[in-house]
Image (tube, one colour):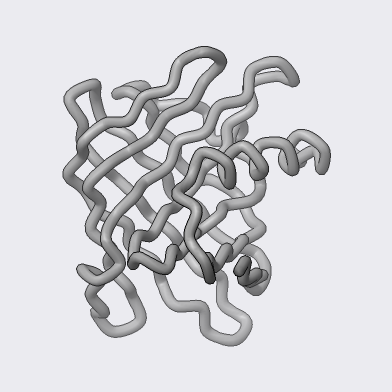
Length: 159
């Protein structure tokens, strides 16, 4: 499924408005595809996942990984894995980020859930795709997303 620029732009603006506002926030986008998606214990067809993954790094050290889902033009939802970047570990070519909360936004539903989980990010080497794999358990069920990039990351700093 190809991302429609207007829809994805609108979803990203929503993410920016729903996220903590801090100076020097860094947004990194990866273009690629989801290979697995789970929301509220329900496995979904990875085709509903948009072709862009956003990783936000805030001045206070918080990090977020945002997955956007689109079942059709009227059904767009977001789920975000959040954690303290100070807790990030490096294991060879992989960064491991602990996750302590998940935010899920769909239509009129906006859930902020405590979570236990992690995101594993392979460091992008020249010519190789990056892989982002997040999983977190909440009181409402498991959230998971596996994303494989097909290009270099785009980085934007917002003062």
